[in-house]
Image 1 (tube, rainbow, N blue to C red):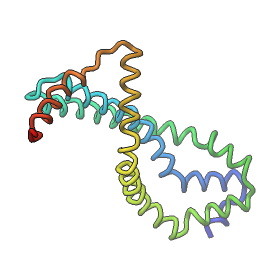
Image 2: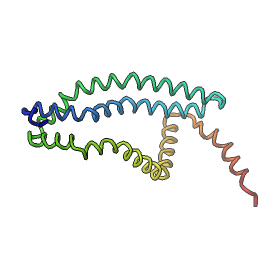
Image 3: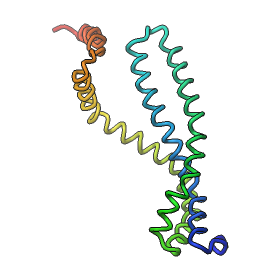
Image 4: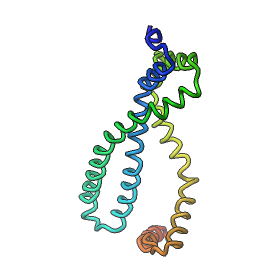
Length: 180
């Protein structure tokens, strides 16, 4: 019945875009959150190394509030732009690359109970997968990332603040070891 209303290719594409709106909105949210996440990481590292311990929590909350405000402001702007841009980009590509029959098949799939369930369960599955992948990959990638950070510090002439702060930690760790 739904497909009876969408006869022309343009109408079929509009239907696919309407069904894909959550995906389009998700992409726009991710675009807004990516730089915010990066800023949060950099800020967190700075706070841990440069802010006195007694002020870290308050500073962290201030930074988090500012970053959250940015995301809250940016997401609606990007969402609006994404929804306006989708017909001329995604829609144009669909019109060019897909036949009417393929568009009808997409609509049938996008409206199917299996796809709707996948959309509901998908974020949970992706999160669990990402957590597991991160945990398993961390021991392999962390040393390489630390090496890259050190090479970049050297290349850019930035002092290694972790060397000074890790020396006491190493001393404390060696002091905790039983003497032979």
